[in-house]
Amino acid sequence: MAIYPKIAAVSYLNTIPFIYGIEHEGNFRAELLLSPPAGCAENFIKGEVDIALLPSAVVPGLRGAEIITDYCIGATGPVRTVVVTGNTPIRDVRRIWLDPHSRTSVQLAGYLARERWKISPEWMDLGDYSALEHPQEGDAYLLIGDKVFDNEGRFSMTLDLAQEWKEQTHMPFAFAVWVGRKGIPYEVHDALQQALTFGVEHIYEAICGSRYADRPYAYEYLTRNIDFLFDIEKHTALKKFWDAGIKITPKVNPG
Image (tube, rainbow, N blue to C red):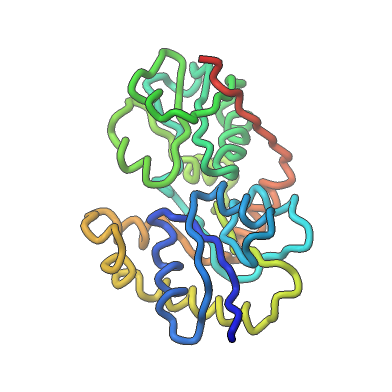
């Protein structure tokens, strides 16, 4: 009986092409586990999957693992779905409530707070999204993924973190990369690469076959905001990001 690799991937719109390729490219077979980005990291670290689309912030701390494809979830300009938003100008923000679903976005917010915005906010855990219903003066919110679409236009201040990073560093960014355990056969690497290529080349079909088929913004987002190629510029950008050593640990709201 054939043994298929177990793969963890993100359950957001930005990974629909990858999921489509894994499920529809005829030469690749795998068992898929879908979850938010932090869940992918947890599943990989626990040894429950062989390959995962991981938040790039966790990669330097992994042992026995390596980046295995030329694809990522990246951006060369505004990414649209990683933002700090609120009704207070960023220079006056005192607390930033952090979406817990992406470690990369949390650490990137910390980098930008220090290097670009020149603020030292209190970092709070946005475990309860109902906090968005009652914004307080001096508060801002880090939101990622599909939740951003649901809140677009709601607040007076919105900063796109990929665009902020690019204006600060003149580099693109990679939010998530494909990582596999060392020792996985290179045939699996090659087959995954081929499946991801198939998916990226069939974005329209991927949307039509997904729960996002009725979202008018889906195709523009995947073809204009997301850049799937993990090229040398994104490698260089991640090294700069990793070398910055930013570590943000949000506080749990005592209320």
